[in-house]
Every structure is written in structure tokens, then in C-alpha cells.
Length: 239
Figure (cartoon, rainbow, N blue to C red):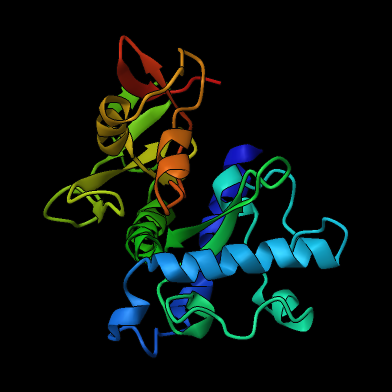
């Protein structure tokens, strides 16, 4: 069921974005994760909670929605309460390329962002996969890279090279992988391998180490499978 909701979440957002261009996407302010804008929204969130006895201005999502895509900020609620007067220029709602969301909503709400350019790449690959699946019994599985996790056989979907997305964390190109049901995800293991070396942590095998990226950077590792640590290396988490 979790995989179904991940696919629904990706598909819904991709359909939304496919019908809307980024009207101001060429403006520098709409293409950079501006710390001042993050701080502004963080202050607005805290003000909103004070005005509403602890509520958060988020859109209602199903409980099964993946954690990093679940708590999207509703800027209309912030404006209605007077907690925010202007939507950040880099927010999708204002023509930007970032979706604002909340990490740790129940314990320590932190404002983070999702890079929506990733969804453009996923949309392109997803369309090719769906076309392939319309004609074939099985998804275009490639090599096995984890328990029930595979690369995408790019040749089967008409690509010249394996599908990748630009990392929001580094200069790396991150692979797109597929689960046993044909749902697609971003593989953040390259960035997590660097994060394990850069940040102090107490994660052990079985823990979801994606929080290393979420806690220490402005970006959420959206549209990904849980990843843990084994022999000091990031591996897909078997649930």
C-alpha cells in the first residue's frame, strides 16, 4: 500500500506540474534555495502555531503518504492568519521551482524544500515506462541493486543512457530506480555516502539514514525509498 501512495503522490504532482509552466523560472530568485526565504517561512510557521494553539498550516494528505512528501505547507492558511504577507519568490505557488514542506511536524517543525525539477525528470521517465507497460506484461526491470529494487532498463524505454536526476545536494547525477511493482524513485545513496562521512551521527543498521540529508540541508530527499547503513555503506532498507 505504501508503494501505491508513493506512485499516486508522484503522479498527482507530476500531472499538476505538467499543466503549469514556471512563469518566473528564469529569475535567479526563483532558482536558488534562499536561506532568508526559508527563515521567513519558518518564522511564519511559528507565528501561525501561536495563533492557532499549535496547529500547522499544511495540506491534508493520506496517512500512507511518504514522510518527505506528506507535510506540504499551505501558504493560503499562513496568509489568512496574517502570519505571512508574501509567498517566497522561489516557491512553486509564486512561479518558483521549490515546494515548501515541513520536517518533524510533531516534535520540531522545520521548514524544508523539495526541488520540483526532479519531478520533471521523473515525469518523463514515468511516461516512457507507462508506454512500455501498455505493451508488455512486466515493467522494464534492469539490474537488481537491492531487495526488490532494480535499475530501469533504459534501452527498453527508448533512452540512450540510464535515467538520472540532478542532485539538489551535490553535483552528482542520481540514478532513478524501480521497485518490484514498477514504481520509480530517486536513488540518493551517492549523497548519503558523502553525508555519512561529513556529519556526525549515531545511525545503525535498520535506521532510515535519509534524515541525514533532511536534517542537515534545506532539501528533503523526496520520492525515494528508505535507505539504511550496513558496513558503513548506504543500502536500501528492507521492510
